[in-house]
Image (cartoon, rainbow, N blue to C red; front, side):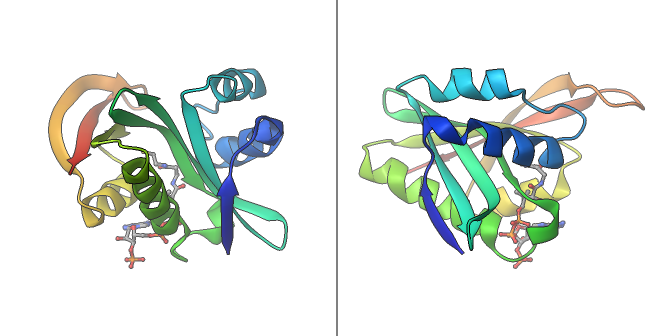
Length: 147
Ligand SMILES: CC(C)(COP(=O)(O)OP(=O)(O)OC[C@H]1O[C@@H](n2cnc3c(N)ncnc32)[C@H](O)[C@@H]1OP(=O)(O)O)[C@@H](O)C(=O)NCCC(=O)NCCS
């Protein structure tokens, strides 16, 4: 598995990965293109033999960076790809002078919560009923990592 910086032309690839990662709330190609067009957006794509496996997209503001979205292709999970993307995004952020990384994650997303905890993120708050679900809304857990 290798990673590289995301470029504007990756929008269709990211949209395909996103719909597989977030089938209930996928970002459209237009949303992704819009995000990639901002100079403050940065991201990493993981791939193997030219097959895209996952990506992470962050938005920088001053010395902070927000993880906008992050997913691994369903068939490629539990192989360390998510961990590698997150660790590399943290490393790149530090190198760019970022001092804090933060994000929202659904309270029922055990996989992501475990991954963030493993990488030193800690909960700093909740947004009640933030993510709609068929059975009722789920809270967002706000996480941050500072250094
Ligand atoms: C969350 C996600 C990105 C993890 O990607 P991944 O490539 O499978 O992650 P990794 O293989 O690097 O796993 C790293 C660690 O995360 C945790 N983890 C990952 N998947 C898990 C699961 N299904 N259940 C519990 N813990 C899990 C474990 O601690 C794991 O370490 P281990 O394999 O040594 O136990 C992936 O499940 C995904 O794309 N989910 C859908 C989209 C999503 O929820 N994105 C995050 C939104 S904030």
